[in-house]
Image (tube, rainbow, N blue to C red; front, top):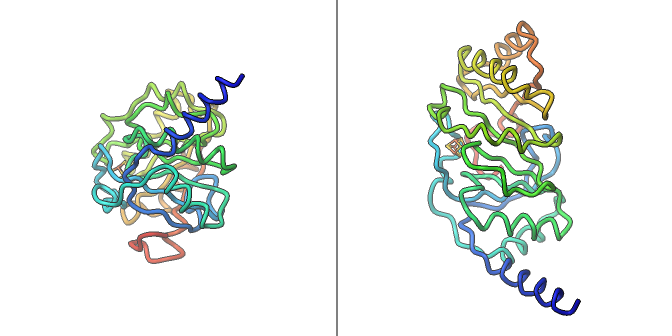
Length: 230
Ligand code: SF4
């Protein structure tokens, strides 16, 4: 029993010394997904293997600061939300995100993770609520979708399609049917800002009967659409 305790203590120390490259940590209102509207702390990890044409977080591709898990925890604890989102960039591109997830969960935080859908979900613990993109053709990145991830989706997870044209919508509609996504988890459809109007997307959703939920980026209605850190 004592050995187990020592091992556990050592692994905790290792976890807290894991380093991550972090673009920003801030509190705001969750703007997307079924969690929209809840106060949330965002941990934005630096770097992404994709380059979506309509990406609105290109500032996270480079830079930021190197922080240990315990330094990140200190910053999260200094803010009030009990909901924490790991986002990017691409959170799964850094190995340190896994110990960070465990450390945040041990602290009692409810966790969300937004991922671009090109990297495996296999290692992601069940206590993380995953919001996974399936990239539509107009993003320029659809060949990078990791469809194997679909088998790891839980009822509490969400798949998000960012729709930049009617062709994107028809492609997404086909994917929802092909993979029976609505029976696996929630499905979100989000109009790409400035490329598709919410009205058009709603019309396509109603005409097609797709089993999906409209996802508007709340923060872009509250603040200026290009404002960072909100
Ligand atoms: S996956 Fe996300 S962060 Fe990466 S390029 Fe696409 S929109 Fe930007």
